[in-house]
Length: 68
Image 1 (spheres, helix red, strand yellow):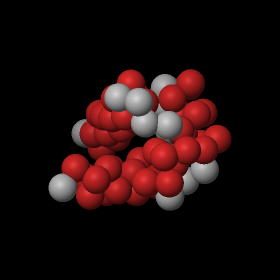
Image 2 (tube, helix red, strand yellow; image 1 turned 90 degrees about the vertical axis):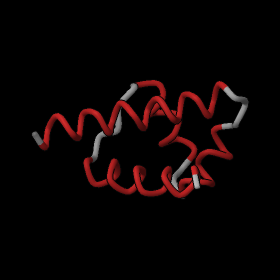
Image 3 (cartoon, helix red, strand yellow; image 1 turned 180 degrees about the horizontal axis):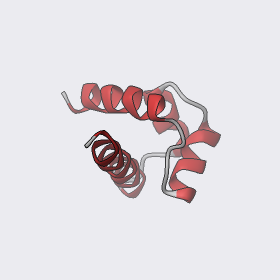
Image 4 (cartoon, helix red, strand yellow; image 1 turned 30 degrees about the horizontal axis):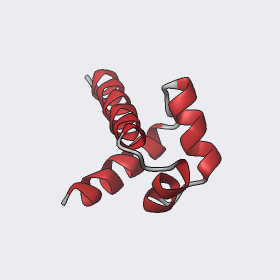
């Protein structure tokens, strides 16, 4: 159950980052909003994955705050 939940969260975050880029937001702006490096944002979008479950948890929280 936990693995499925994490896979869903990974996919949701990648979809949200992709949506942000497609709406015209720069890698730099996304990285500033999330508090991560530009290279991390680029790597996540290129590879369509986020390597750390802890980072997924943090990004889930930060993205939820952006949507408020």
